[in-house]
Structures are given as structure tokens and as C-alpha cells.
Image (tube, rainbow, N blue to C red; front, side):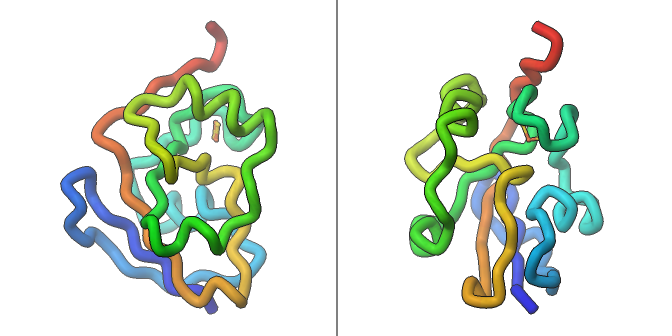
Length: 111
Ligand code: FES
């Protein structure tokens, strides 16, 4: 199992949940009723699943694809450790992952 911590925009802890390796972070967030829209359901067209990964955990993730980087360029409140939750697959090796939900999101779907 992987321990996922969701933090609010101000950095305070909102929820800690256990998730199975292989799960998408976006699905874990939806199950935990976190405010991540995921409007395009994972086809990298919206940026509403943008999360800020804790700096200590960022290196646990494989690098973002070029398409993900392009979408992150358009995400609101993007920072050095930004990722799309629809592109993060949990692994056993991660053990834990802490992410912060940004204060707002930009939806680029259909623009
Ligand atoms: Fe739309 Fe991730 S759900 S980019």
C-alpha cells in the first residue's frame, strides 16, 4: 500500500489515505473526495488535476512526458514540483506521497 497525503492550498493536511500500487493519483483523489476536478478524465487536455508534489517526494516520480509538461505550462499556480494527478501511477516503492492541491485550476478543455 502507498500512503497518500492530500494537503490544502495553505499546506495544512487535509486527508491521509491508503492506496493500492497501480492506482492513478487522480482516482485516489476522487475516492477521497478531494477537490480535483479532472475534467478530461486523464487525456491531458484540461490541467484541472494539477497538484504540487512535496519537494521530498518529487524524485520518486518518473519524469513527466512532453505532453504533460506542455499541459503544466498552462496550469494555474504551476511550480517546479507540479504534476498532473492523472499521469501519476502509485508504486509500492513510493511508500508515501504528499501532494498539495493548488488554490485554483485552469480548465483548458475545449479551448
Ligand atoms: Fe485533465 Fe489530468 S484530468 S489533464
